[in-house]
Length: 600
Image 1 (cartoon, rainbow, N blue to C red):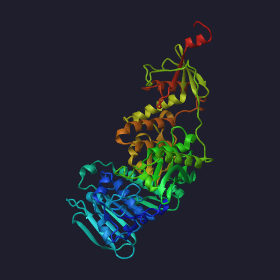
Image 2 (image 1 turned 180 degrees about the vertical axis):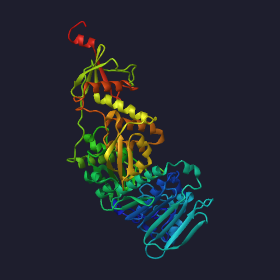
Image 3 (image 1 turned 90 degrees about the vertical axis):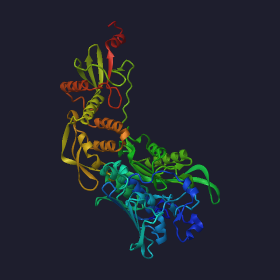
Image 4 (image 1 turned 135 degrees about the vertical axis):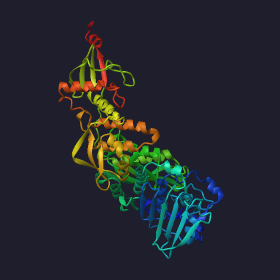
């Protein structure tokens, strides 16, 4: 693994890049410096912004070297030490020495075009940029003789790259492959180090990224250790086994795999002229009965490269259509294979975004393949409830759900259709959506928990166990205090399993243990600018779990209905549920009189 090395992944079905480079393969030193014009075309930006970026660059290099196994070890938040080892093609002495130079690469001709590149890396700046911000040690061997050890120390107080002389090169013993160790990251950049989140949060980013790579490249065995403990291990066999390793047995057992090719209906150049362009779609799709509350588990990759592409992610979800319950998101990982000439990886410095030709046609192909794959799968979902209300039933309160007054003078009369509480209030008959009202009560109680008012909890005896994916487990550790404030007290229980000791129990009703996943997704899935919105979305979803639902209200005594009214009346916004729907509709006496032809 070098700053950039030849090769691609056989698992992704792409031909090796060496043939395309022709005579360049005969160069004595495969790692070459890019010319200035090519460097100027490459997307600019800071390469190393946090430990996860370091891991991503090094994994790219390992995969480009046709590694069948990639081992990653992280200490603390990743600034202490990161080690990435692979069994791919190693380098000889000259290549290893040049690999730590900026803009030196084996993946792109000196005057080459980044568009159409078949490898994950191509800029030749990863190792050089890392070495400027840390101490970097590279040990590599092509497997046919003595290996090479290269050390560049960017923490020595002066800039140290291979363009200067502060580089140690010596023989070293190693089997075929490459190991890169990065230590003291950002030691000379205190502002960058101080901008990082805590150790658990930074490792959660790394864990999520490695999971993306493992699902995008299932034929490669990945392992991830944190502070000496194994957190992820994939066998490098198939997509189902990768899904099992990243998530759990329940998710893997309720999933299907897809591997299809679709003609895009457009033409593209090939060796014999203009040939039809097809897109390959391969991946693992959890059934619609396995969902999450956020889109964090919709994973998309292009030619084996994990990317953020809203259009493709939306297309994947569109493939599920109305099989998903309202407000839920799928668990799915899909790799989209396209001719390299139709992919531009040079649109973003992080290489996590790509430009696609015929993006709309590609998205339509993804949606259709996913839809076809799910035909006949587990279609269980929440039933839709349709309500057509007469125009005489108008929502009570202002548009934002607030209104002066409460229900102190209101008297419950009974329950209609095991959901709607009928209440007499002066000259009005109030129809209260019991579930929406209870949601509002629970939501405001949970909101006060963040302001120091403890939320009621219920102990689980015995404690429930929740299987989490590797990135979810890391996030659970990072946000343990936030989860505890919401009523979820957890502890590690080996591997990716957490033991759940308490759950929120506002208004005396116990939340389902599954609500823990939604809480975890919301507290870990937002940046600082969206933290408040994410928290509110979390509380709204969380309030739904323990709330009374249709089927619960016929068994309530008059005293229970009175308690619900009193608690609803205490809310700051009693006339709208947390999702914005009205909780109370009103019919005044004049409406009844007019309907029956009476004066009053």
